[in-house]
Amino acid sequence: MKDFKLRAWKTEDAESLAQAANNPNIAKNLRNVFPSPYTLEDAVWFINDSIANAKKNPINYAIVVDGHAAGGIGISVKDDVYEKSGELGYWLEEDFWHKGIMSGAVQMICKEAFERLDIVRIFAEPFADNAGSRGVLEKAGFTYEGTMRNGVFKNGEIHSYCMYSILREEVNS
Image (cartoon, rainbow, N blue to C red; front, side, top):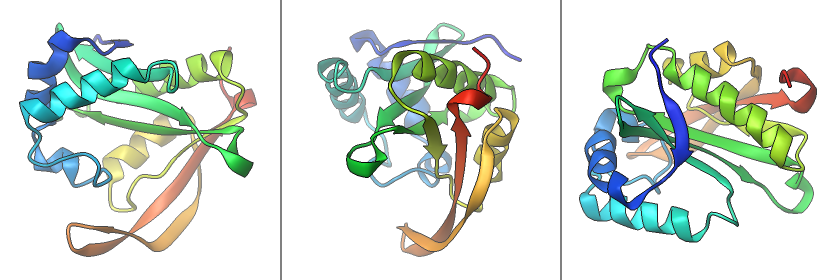
């Protein structure tokens, strides 16, 4: 596995964030809130928002590889009847795919989330045709729960997505 670390976003990450995120191969597998193209202005806005909301969403990190922000990962606690669940989201610069970074980052952040947050479950919803992301989750110990058929609309097309989860007792302390 290639070396990486997780840390809070910093304002000086803006240029490397914009460079890493400006890739349609990344954006096509994420929610529409992730812009494409991804500009320096988008990066500055995201970092400023992350810093301003650090207490509201305490686990939102840069994935740092070779000294620069090469991706992002976070867990957001849900509300209402889902208040004991956290949703995992992540992405990584394409140059670093298939190097074990993301599976390692997912394991690290899940361990931290179960230590710090009052949740019992973490879930992720990759698009069904995103084999790479599904593999990351499976390698990190997540359980496939099912496919939500025709559940999302992205770039003018209907896609299915999958539900994966990991429970507190399934993560090594």
